Length: 194
Length: 445
Image 1 (cartoon, rainbow over the protein chains, first blue to last red):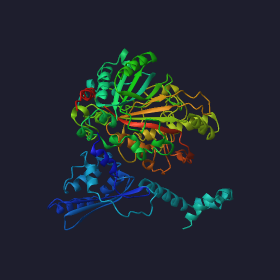
Image 2: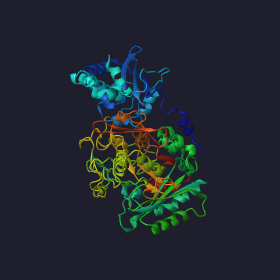
Image 3: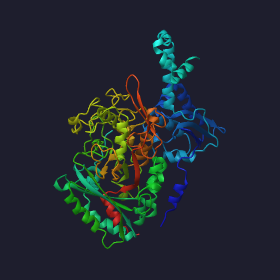
Image 4: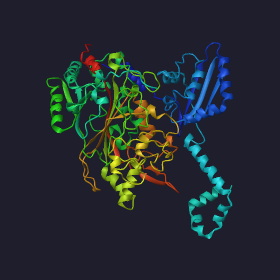
């Protein structure tokens, strides 16, 4: 005895959507409830007014590069497009009670069929609204959001060191000649030159 | 959030909630059933041996028998299709199908697994645990007698144990850390962690969101059940010891490097509380050896316990930049197997040894698979590179991992770490409550 679902389940790609390096794309197209487009615009206006809150919410997710909402087709449809490290749903369970979930709830409750962000079936609903991209490529496919933040901190610290007179003095000090001669340090100086 | 639900202890298998004797011996038995009737009869005969979590922990509480079924097993018992369809998809697929998600690749790939792992032959799993050999033999005799005259065959048997030293194969005290479960009366090991809602481990109760986790139907089958992950993992102890030797200048350095990789000293004393040297008294004290946080205790950056160390990956506590640790906790019921490699030996003696990992949870994907893929085998959550992995627990990728030990002025970074463990096989089980087992035994389809 076999069940039909079993075959269907394994035939279903678990996560539709394209990846490029560490990132994946996630785009959903939903039907806006009749007459709800203006209410939805108000939600987006509120999110714009509280842009710092929106940004904090993204930071909270930790894997989200960019996200945008678009109303189109004469106010009948909504697009949500985003890029995540790993897959969009990896962390979704972690945010059921956070501001990002509240934002999602505020937006998608104006679309048809949305079960609510804490509903156990919400992931399936999103997948049912998803359209996978046919091309997806990024200019830094190996960098995650958290690495970008880390790299930024390294660069800022490095630039601050370059601005100290003590660094110039250290370069001029013959005692450091051996260090300066290493290929690794030469690479650092190459970055420092411009 | 506190659970207002009273747990139905009398319907939960003792193995889920009750602590084990220590030391103990145990045996895993995996059966194939050839017809629904045979399978139901096997359950009916095994049922009287299973105690509930409500029974007082006393003399004979040192004997525990637990029973769980795979998806193939539920099918073999003739569970109706509507019910089969209500189980979690990853459970339906079985562990071998999840290899990519679990990083079971290379030497750990399912086609390399021990038989019958990765096949459809594993139907019913029985684990018997006892404080000593005599008791275990008695229980095993009963468990094996339960199949006599039935179309049931034993397809896998694995003896396991916890040694009096409480140490696993690499030489570290094991099983020290457990979450407290709200409403269970079973205390956790870390007073700094608020008890976890029961629905994270037991179906039919609110989880951390306050809602009920998805549960298989009918209600009688789902309620008081748990999903159980079983994985047999070989540990190459000689290779681990050689690695420590090759990357240290003296014995103290070896011990320190091992501790940095594990996050604890061999005694179990955590680096969080004993950053500089072994502290056997601390390691042996269950009231203290898991009672710590990271960020709140001033170690956000991991100068004491490296963020990439084994215990910090498995349970980052309050040290996560993003995500919610409480949604990825597991009850651990792992056991060691095989003879210890004698102290000081650096050459492999060819013996099979390691750990049979057992994790209990309500959502295999959100809990076990997440920890395995996000925290053990990748490092995005640490802001680390793609090649940074759990230096002790990551199997399968033998192309050389990285491990960073934060220290001042400059971190130490190890490169080209081999995998010290290999997945030998595993499967996803469902451990029903006692009424559910009776319901399965009474099926009449």
